[in-house]
Length: 500
Ligand code: ADP
Image 1 (cartoon, rainbow, N blue to C red):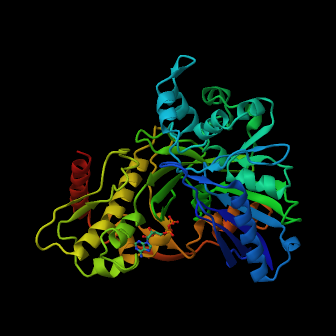
Image 2 (image 1 turned 90 degrees about the vertical axis):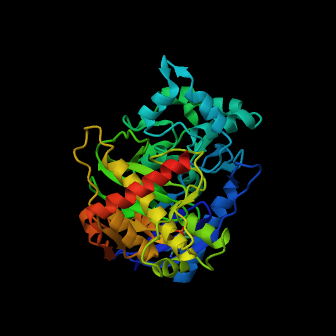
């Protein structure tokens, strides 16, 4: 008997899966979702298309399994984070396209705000202390402000309490409940720049800074439990799990205790380290975020992102034309014993944590007449592994004394590029810890289903859930400490030169 329906609303597609009570996925369906690029740096989506692609994926997965919508009792939702929607409460009509997380239109507004003062304090410092984030266009607050400033009549409507703001989870739940529930979970709330991660509530000072009426905001709920009851599309479905995509992946990888970490190797990389009940501030500008709240117990995480990881392999394929497909990189790189002194810094769109240098550009060092495309392929894979190692080290040295000795003992991995055995072995070698690949690469939607199953008491506690999680392969470090230091020294020298 199938019990859990997982919805995974991502930036480029909406997916729906069915999970059995033994924690395995039985069916999966996907619908593409277009993005709209009205101007350079702007990225939008049609809110109705977000909903209709998600609804179509649900119908498809139910059709494949031969199930009636009323068979579904338990629903978990995970979603692209930060993407901002505003709609009319009375009609449910969006007043603008969704502004997608990648959209940079508010970068100048954020830079301006960062230099301002509020109640005698620098806004940038105040925002980062309260939210654990950086004051950046990436997060929702400046996007809401933009909509209120630029859509005719919007500010007056908002002040009259007629508008609702939501991230994608809120929007899907609004749709599923026929407008009866306007909620978001703590993990999504913690990505808006309006949520105080210490008090776990919307914060009046932050609302003042961004000039956003409190009446627009959703009610903040746990990530697991009896959260809402659907009336549309899935008439008997209870929504019992909600989390932003990276937090869901951390849960899907069962990183439940402080020091447990996961990395998703996709176009970029998303690393998350579980820090337990304490929010840890990072001196390296890693993000502090809520991982989830279950039965009133909050878990926090540190997050670091790499902009270009698998995208570097795409560049070898499409930009240089030295590969026909991304997976080919493994055999090509394995055809030489080392990179022959070639170091590739894949900063094709700047460098993220812990360097934070938007002006850095990609660079290749150490070329000799003996260098071949195989050396370049190997150096590209090493470049991914080195960037991940820098973030893991930054996470481990982020403790402000509130959490003792945050050591990462192993890294759990998922995402398209994590299927590359050579890359995983390089990662183990450069970090000096085991890299653990889980049995399913679907950590994100798995996490949403786990949260939902826990919320519906299909599993009574997380220990039951941990038994569902299985590793498929473990890569143990084969290098010694000196080799690691030597390689990292060459990498850091290359980073220094790429930023010069
Ligand atoms: P996203 O979710 O970001 O679209 P995916 O998890 O689907 O990404 O992974 C796709 C990325 O992984 C692409 O950038 C691709 O170049 C890279 N990739 C896919 N297979 C491999 C491989 N075997 N080795 C290295 N990179 C790979």
